[in-house]
Length: 183
Image (cartoon, rainbow, N blue to C red; front, side, top):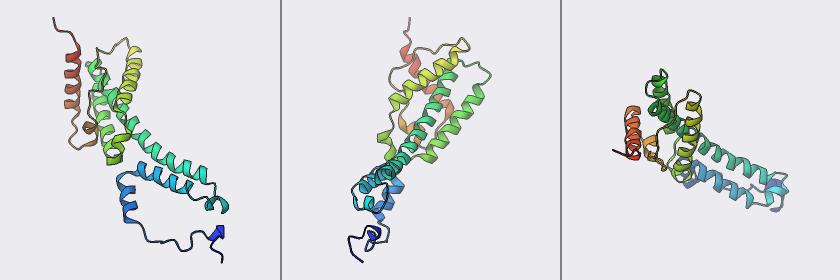
């Protein structure tokens, strides 16, 4: 067999797992997907073997993006519910919203990987949450109070153990109080 044979490009490749790569996969899945896609693109011999390298690389990158999208969606939903709670504290759905927030945070923590922090834009999530909560509340003639422009929640509030919904509500209420002019 010739070394140039595109169907046997893998011959001679060490089949033992690279421990650094395993750690990367476990600690920063998104970074791992970007890395793996780049490696695929850097192996033109795979195209000669009949593989659609560009689309395979894109699919691998999409796996990483979907993880970030899942995290940001859950964070956004948690923020939307917190905003609804502070905007309409007497709403009968308040307890349900509180339970939902707790569930979202548990789901965030389960999906979280330390390498995701640099890829999550809390400011963008906050702006989207304000828009979504405002639109939902408008249906019931409820408006959001004056809110801080910057996201009042640190990323760690959603990713570390010990999250407390009531404390998050109080934290947000405190940030809102800072926005409200005092007589």
